[in-house]
Amino acid sequence: MDETRTDRPTVGYPYFETPEPTVFSSGTTYVETDTEFTQIVTHQWNHGLGNVVTALLDHSMTIT
Image 1 (cartoon, helix red, strand yellow):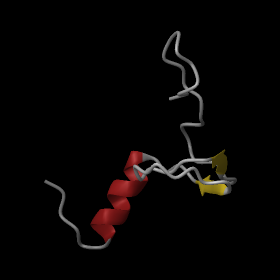
Image 2 (cartoon, rainbow, N blue to C red):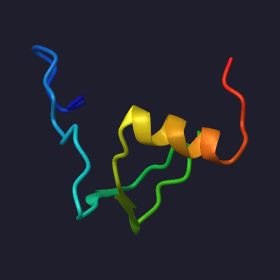
Image 3 (tube, rainbow, N blue to C red):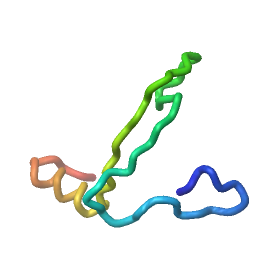
Image 4 (cartoon, one colour):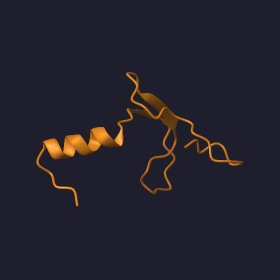
């Protein structure tokens, strides 16, 4: 979801896998802290739920 839209829910990123990552640049992380970082750039690839479940099962994990 696109967190910058506050008036209505909006899909902001590709649902299907893409060869290039989505790049985010922010002064925060997922860790709660009072520190403001100056250089945080993340590269994220999206993976469909089926790919994640298949990868887990292929490595002998059990899903309940």
